[in-house]
Image 1 (spheres, rainbow, N blue to C red):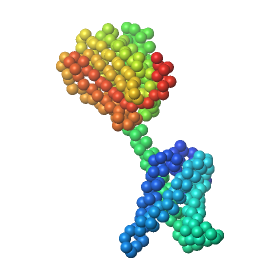
Image 2 (image 1 turned 180 degrees about the horizontal axis):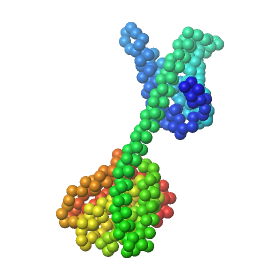
Image 3 (image 1 turned 30 degrees about the vertical axis):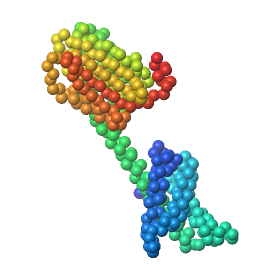
Image 4 (image 1 turned 180 degrees about the vertical axis):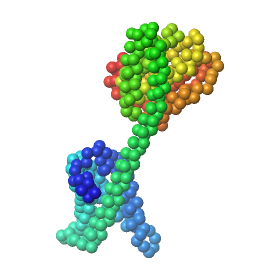
Length: 360
């Protein structure tokens, strides 16, 4: 146990998420300033003063502590890359050295300015320096512990999100695989060359399903996979399946979760076209506008609307995956208008101008 701990502390940190956050960010600086001010307020309130609250002590203590906090954050920000390449024990020692060292330095400077008025040499009050150094040591330990717990919480959140996405994706796999295999079986006797092509398309689809659940492909890749799926269904349905694409406004490099459109197409065929003897059509529209991706799938549907649990499950899965990857602004909607059923998904996505230029 001791050997394992020593090995961990004596080796450079190999992970991407370093225990010390980026203290150059505005949010990190704001958090440190607020926490430091709360500490100053507690220290001032802990000292009883006759005649009311001592605003002067609060101002002087705030100036003293905030100088230490801001300079410590600036130094640790510059040293963060260096500490990531060093042993964890050395990185921790550097954090304590910077904060405690600055605290002792400003303690001496404050006594020199306020006490002797910079007329004489600075004096070292050992008791006061030990007190300030001990406070800095304790507060640095608490902050480092907080940063460590925050890092562990973020890693746990990411692991839970990945597991949830994997579970959602695994619920989709058997659904389209079963229908695709049925299509291939029907082609083996009558059109073996089409069956062979269908197997290749199915292999691409299944390879995509075996990829990481939180993997994000490009629209060009998603389009290729969905066209392969539609070819499999076209072999089975023939002229009963008509497909039209209106996707010129969606750049090929647009990021999209793997097999997001495919379940919508499967719903359109399974619950819209397949029950109709005459079949029907599917229209896919896609566009990117002002940092937002929109996909709309509409299809013919039977006159009488039926309750399809599988359709709702697929839509719920897509909604959960988009929300997990792109945040709460992502949404999935579905509705019916007379003889057509509509499925619409929207999620935020920022694009550089070069991608839009290459798409035209």
